[in-house]
Image 1 (cartoon, rainbow, N blue to C red):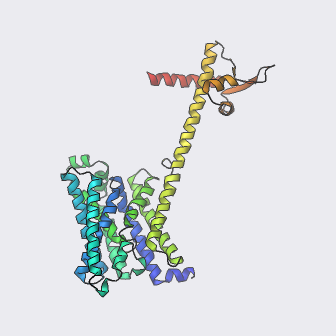
Image 2: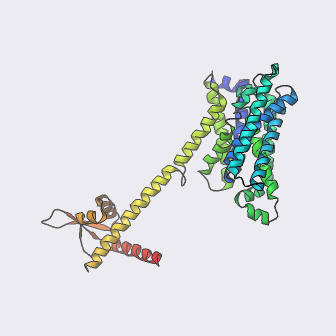
Image 3: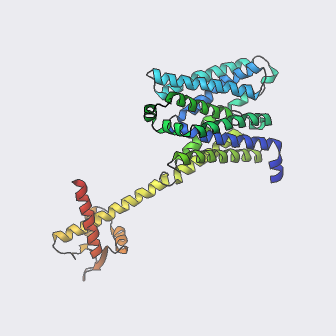
Length: 378
């Protein structure tokens, strides 16, 4: 299939547009969940949406996405409010409250789904696809509903940006300023439920938690400011959504939802490894530099103290002596110090062993290091 034929295909267009809106809203709203240390909230809300899906189907009597999404939103919002109530008015921790709500609502959803399947209702076919998503079944009418939810989320985040930011980073200060912190937290939680609702058709109940968490986690590795993190998380969500949709289209028989989750998971892995100042590779490089800097400082101060003890600024220390003192080979580190002009190597005939002495700049550097150490100890 050519690129033009692929992009003009009705089903492909629907899947790509749906994945785009899913990535946008989940990345944007997931950032607030991650910063509030409520990453598992997306998992709880996505599983809690299952009974809402079933109740929406029973109310509509058919597989109408509008009714199903409304039911999922109400069920997710109710689950979120229960989590807030349990954590605020009981001794349960957040993880315990999330676990209780998740398991209870999901069990109720499975019971309702089994009941619907036992009614022999012809219109219930494919209802279980909401567990893992069925992107190919997305219609233009479904996209209109998803676009409305996405637009509402954008309006709320834009209009309440300062309030959401303060509640995420310092809810105590927000409460002191007279802000309705509880109402803002409920609004944020309901908005995350909105993100879950958007992803039900594309990704499904089981995998939606990854779309709420992963784009925000990946974006957090690359930036320090919320103003940068939220749009970057949305961008990561869009890229993973579109790439997963395209791969599933090119590879016939591949499920779209899992491929989208795999795409965003790859972004997380790349971010965790290579992001500057936060990535694992960056941390390894920094640790290596710190160890090298510490070794250089130790060698310089050792040469300085030996020279002071012998009363000779030009005192030459033998290579083997330095190796024994530091209990490791020091030649490579001394060679790097020699390139910097802080030490110089000398030969003392008839011996063939290498001796090392500080240069003038090396003595100044060693004296500065010792002075800073003495100041820190004081």
